Image (cartoon, rainbow, N blue to C red):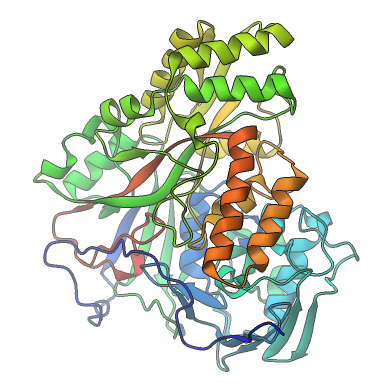
Length: 538
């Protein structure tokens, strides 16, 4: 029999802390001002979709969803797992999990958070008729297909409500780390009112987290107030948040300098070499967990799932001088990638077979491209699409396409889109017929989370529609592993397959960078490279 797995008020995972406090940092126990005037203005971007947790998988919407909802577990600043709505998550065999909720949790409309709040939300997320972007996260549950969609209509056979505060989850295969995944937004609960009109609900969600969404002025800002009934792990130390939406990171940086914006989760290239010496702001920089990649969909001509496609992907990877870009464009605040994840993950492995494909070698790159041309000669231009409202995107994309042009002696051009929401919509709808920039901010601290949602067959963030049964099997073996060493070994095997196929080309890991206006206190940057907004005061 496999060992019993129990989570009760204890951390199940931890990573190296990325927490650091601004000069004169705030007292975590201080709380917000009684008159409700301590509202924090934060940099943000317009969400891609209405704010439904199972359909939000990008950072702009994620900032808001994470602030207004609470899940079964939450993650501490260092990435460790803590019980939040759940009282306990237990299993005798890592296959059937019994989840008990704490009594007394309510949504912002006063209705109780019950077992049905989770089960109904997960069933909705897995219903193929609803086409939810995060459906893949339900893939481990019995009654779903590879894409995480229900195979039995509107409900999953692996979900059963026992009573108001208890439900059971039966998985297809044992997964010892299942509880650690449950803090991600796909697993958040929904109130009964959500199912009356989900699109309308997404414009003004009724939620159960530290904050409540008061207003969403599209393309301008989202206004959040504190939730007086919240009693979870992330008690706000301020009186509210306003995410101000920017398409120009330079404008946002200027607003931090002037105090119009209190905290910003990135730095534009124009300031990357000077921001740490800028006396008008407070600067934070430590090794981080967010990676950057180039996705080349297999549907593109010359880049299919065949020998020609593999050779061309490998050639492009070898043609990119990552150290030159991270040094000249990012002033060494980014680190060249050595795998598809981050060294900060607890199951990171230094030596992944085939990782030398990430090393710059112009001569070998040209030879690989020539081998592909012998199979089918390349014509036209290699285009790399990106959103221009992201800090540094224009600069690095131009640098990388220049390198590809010079080192492979082909045409290579940037292809810019003004706004992230538009860019992501084209990717989601498979309407972008070029390579495009991608990246991953982990949902929970594990290499598994970097590669399963992005490359697993049918996964919600598998933007290039990659599918390899050997890779999927390696993922299953990693999920079922009983100890950390075995899990890391299977994850390394999975990454070795990715190194050969290169459905996306790893570029670099971004440092955990944030800036704050003078006078702002309590800034801590977490394991996801994001400020802990609930701790910020001024």
